[in-house]
Length: 90
Image (cartoon, rainbow, N blue to C red; front, side, top):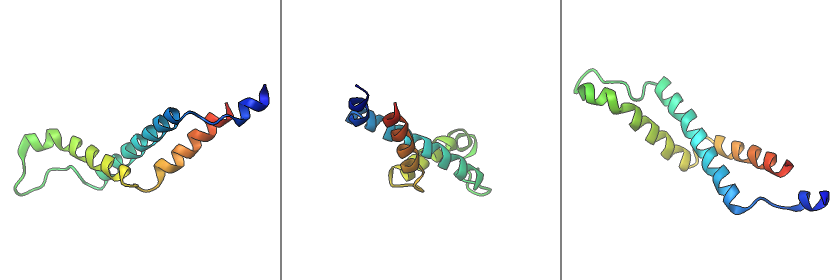
């Protein structure tokens, strides 16, 4: 019984969910890096005012998500592989 547990591969839906979670984690990391770099801060001239201040975090989050989906910095792949190893070990 133990051998069959080791030879089973995770279902594709599990792998897809893990991949999506890894991309989301990378996007969150990238969003924090973009915020630290000054993205989303109001500009001095031609500012959007209070509206820009309120919604800039959404813009930064979406930019980070698109970066992660396009390959990002490779963090999602590392996270995905680590989660797959954990899934395979169980």
